[in-house]
Image (cartoon, rainbow, N blue to C red; front, side, top):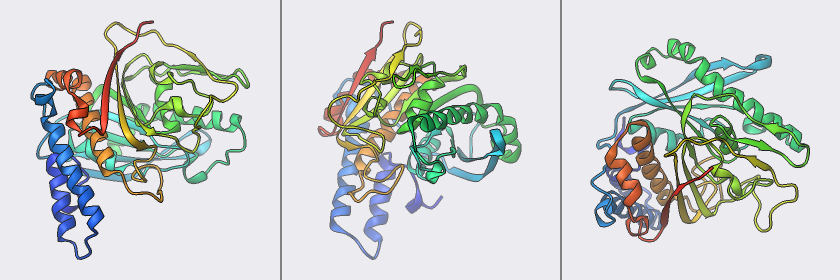
Length: 357
C-alpha cells in the first residue's frame, strides 16, 4: 500500500501522513499544524501508559497491509441488494471480525478511515450498506425509522449467516476470519442496531413497539457515538447491552437524529439485558468532539476535519479490541490505568464502568 494513502493513524501512520502532506505542492499551514498536533498526541498516547501507569501496550507497527474488496452484494429480504465492503489484512492467519453499521442515510464508503485502521491492526471489517443509505428511505415517520432499524438488525445477522458465501466470493478471506470471534459496531443510528444484536431491548413510548433481536453471536460492542444523545433515547442507553462495550462520544456529539437540551417527550424505555459478571464498559469522551469527527465519517461537514479526535478514537478502540477479542493483557492494563488526559494533552478522558444488574 502506498505510504501516502495509508489509512492508519497510529504513531508511524501520523508521521507518514505528515511527511506526505509536507511534500505536496499545496501545503496549507493550518492543516500542517493540525497534523503536527496529531503526531505529538499520538506519541503521547503511545507513551501514556507509562506516564499513567498503564503498562507497555503498543499498537501494531508497522501496520499490516490492508486489502479492500467492494464486490460482494448479498440479497436481503424482498430481493433488496445488500452490498458489503470488506477490509482485511493481506497477510497472517485468522482475525476477529467487526461488522460496522453505518450512520443514518450514510453509506458503506464513509467509514474507510475507521475500518482501514482496524484492519491494519489485525481485524477483518465488514460494512454492510443498509436500505436507508443515501436516503433510500424517506424518514416520514417514527414507524418508518423503526422499520429501518429492524432491517438493519437483519442485515447484521445476514452478514454472519452468509460468511460462507462471502468467503467464496473473496477467496483470500477463507482462512482469515476467526470463527465465533465477532464484534458489532455502529455509528449514529447504527449504535442502536449494534446494541440490539448484543442483547439490548427497547420499548418506544409513542407506539409501545418492542425492539429486540435473537442474535447472540456478537461478543463485544463498539459505539462510535453516544446513542443516549439521540431523540427519544435516555442518557444511559449505551450500557443496555449484555457484552463488554466501548463507547466514544464528544461534547458536541449531536447528529441528524440527535437533540440538545431537555429530553424529548415519550422517552424510549430501556429493558436491560442480563449481564454476566466481569462485563466492563469504557467511555471515551473527546472535548469538542462532534458526531462526525468534523466530516471524516458519515457525511461531509463544513467544519475543520477532526483528525486528532479520530486518531484518538482509532487507537483507543483498538486497545479495547486487542484486550477483549485477543486477550492482550497489556492492552487491558492500558485501558484500566492510562491517564487519558495526560496522554492526549487534555483532549480526552477514558472512564471505566462496571454495571450492576
